[in-house]
Image 1 (cartoon, rainbow, N blue to C red):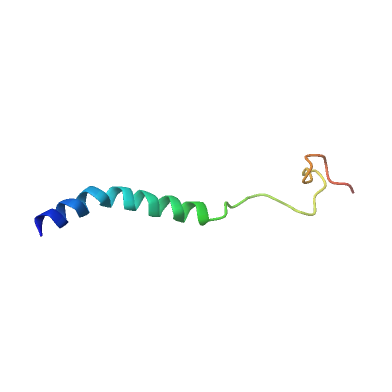
Image 2 (image 1 turned 30 degrees about the vertical axis):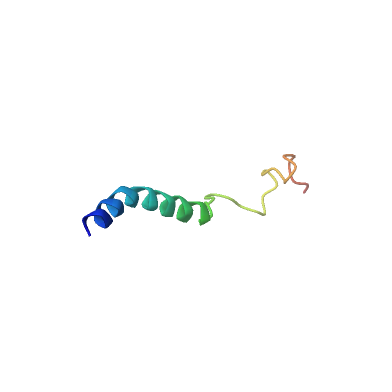
Length: 51
């Protein structure tokens, strides 16, 4: 039983780090102040959108 507890304590930080990294990578970042109707924002190619 003591060995199982020791192993659990040794592996817990890595498991938590992996779980947190997975959770954060699955979240989409929020883009604030973005107005898709404005032509001042660059298009997918990096050039200004027409219009």
